[in-house]
Image 1 (cartoon, helix red, strand yellow):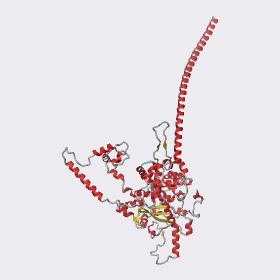
Image 2 (spheres, rainbow, N blue to C red):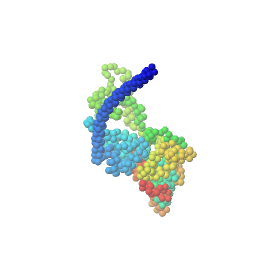
Image 3 (cartoon, rainbow, N blue to C red):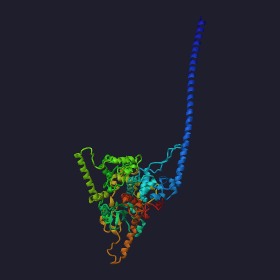
Image 4 (tube, one colour):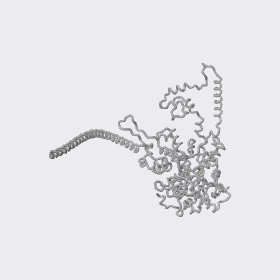
Length: 634
């Protein structure tokens, strides 16, 4: 029994072990089947991926071929144009073309090179980035597509306006270069001429200090013996007369040149840096009266204390300032638009009306529009009832009679109005415009001053980085760096160096306005027309002029008088030479046509900036200069 019981236990254990082995084997076989099925699915997925990869490779190869063909076509096209083409959008905005034509930038825009042109534009206009003209090249095989040029960029519009001032080309000629209509060129000039004018004002109406004038004094002044002086001089620009307005006609006629002119005064340092000038006035105003008016503001400072953190929250768009003219409010077309019901006006025009067609378009102009047939124009013209008659099929009412009476009154008023045109200018208007000109400018608000100083700082960094050639303005920016950085820090500008400490209100430098910026210790040199003008200076700076003799035949000049006149003339010859640079702009030469007079104030401002963007006629003397001779050669 014990043996039997032992055998049974042994057999039972072996059976259980065998059952467990069978179960494990079954599970292993099931797992193998599942793994095999999974491997089979993965192999199928891999095959599908390989097929898709092959298709993608073929598509990539095809696209690469098309791109290479397009690039080759673009390179061949641009290479041919740049090698054989003349003036055009593609050529004048291409670096390679300017490498072949070194003097093109100077002829077109006045700058020494295309690289200098782009650098000045980037520093003057924060919203403009120099780019090349883009060409849209169609894919190969697309027979319906054609080559197209991209829209005019802000950089192109900016230099388009500069081209107009530099060469005074007719708008129709500029339109041929840029492939646009003449009226489109006019709109671009209305947009960018005031911006160039504001840039010119920022570079020419600057705040000079006694420290700078001392450091800038030329060695020639020390040799002649006329020291601590600045120069004042006036210039006239001949303009066409306006026969239809006697008031404006009289205001522009000057007895000095016996011609119709615009007149301004300019104050410059002994080295030739222009730091103050008046806007253009009618030549009827004498130079003495302009001097008296510009000094009538007295000794005043800009409210710099109120401009704390003026840069905080100001966007780059808000810094795109335009030159505001005193005559801007004389005639504003926005005021006219408020008085005109555009729906009524458009309903009276025959044919279709597009967004780019003036409301004054004639039927012939409308007929030439795309998508408008001549028949529709004639039909619209025939359908109009301009006779004022009523339908004979109905009886005349009192309302019809009233309408006839209103039309007769309107016709009579129109005939009377065309008989005598009221003058554009009046004494009240001129007084308001003069006051606006006197108190306006770069020191009229915190935003104006912020934009000017930031332009100065960007230019200063470009000069120091040797991206631009040194000139009279760069020397001023170098000497005034500490003064400028303190104000930028006070205003919260990002261009203020991090190492500069924000000054307290008590330590802020003073910004003197107009003629009060000339230090008390400095005198002025002028021609005979500025005799007895010392009383007009807020600081009573003595104005020294050549001897004014009532009759030179009565007696000879003494040797002392001749010596003094030689000293005065030798020192102030810089002011006369400055105006040669001022009138290097074609638009300021000869007689300005009537249609260009609207652009004249902007060219006037940039002409003064152009004086400062050249090397000084007389460099600072070695005893006063803050730089060595190598500074001017870099």
